[in-house]
Length: 163
Image 1 (spheres, helix red, strand yellow):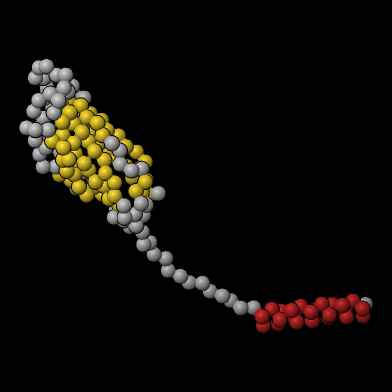
Image 2: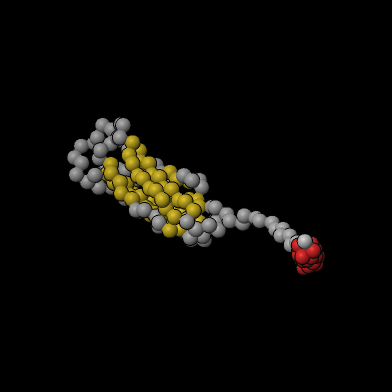
C-alpha cells in the first residue's frame, strides 16, 4: 500500500512540475493584419474611327462610351464600303481574357444587299495593353437595282473577364 501511495505522490509531483514547466515556456502569439484589394478592372472602348470610306459615301461621326460604340454608315452605290476600327484598352491592373463574342444582324426589315465582315480583338488583353478590331460594311457589288429595304442593323458583342 505504501508503494502505491509513493507512486501516486510521484505522479502528482510529476504533473505539477510539468504544469509549471509548460506555464514557464508557453507563449501566446497573436496575429493581426489588414487586407486591401488594390486591383482595378477597367476594360473599355476608347476609340472608333473610319479607316476607309469609298468615294461619295458618308461614315458619319462614330460615337462611343466605355461599353458601347456605334456608327451610321451611308453607302452610295454597289461596291462601296466603309471600314471602322474600334480600340479597346485595358487601363486597369487586372489582365483580361475575351470569353465571348458575337456579331449578328437584326433580320427583321434588313437589306440583303448590305453585308459586313469583322475581325475579333485580341483574346488576351493584359493590363496596360490595347487591341483593335474592324468592322467593314459593304453594298453588294452584284446589286443591279435599288433595293426597297435600304438599311441593316448590325450588333456586335464582346465579353472580357478577369484572366
